[in-house]
Amino acid sequence: MVVTKNTIIGDILDADATVAPYFLEIGMHCLGCPASRGESIEDACMVHGTDADALVEKLNAHFAGADKE
Image (cartoon, rainbow, N blue to C red):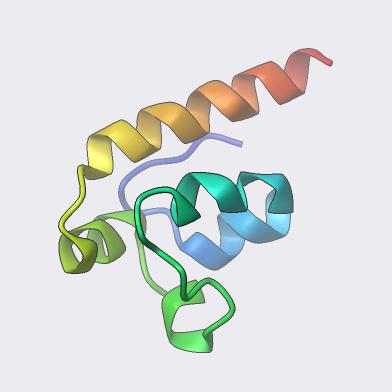
């Protein structure tokens, strides 16, 4: 999976639920909420005052590593 700032959080969690800690560590504790699962990375980061590019980079590194296993 390749993540962009426009990728929907629910799609990311459906692809690999083990990425939840990446969201939790930046204050996104509402991952089970239907509204938050429908948000893009960019929208969620804007609401939580965090860097969307940094989260995208971290998620893509995770998925790149997961693909090699």
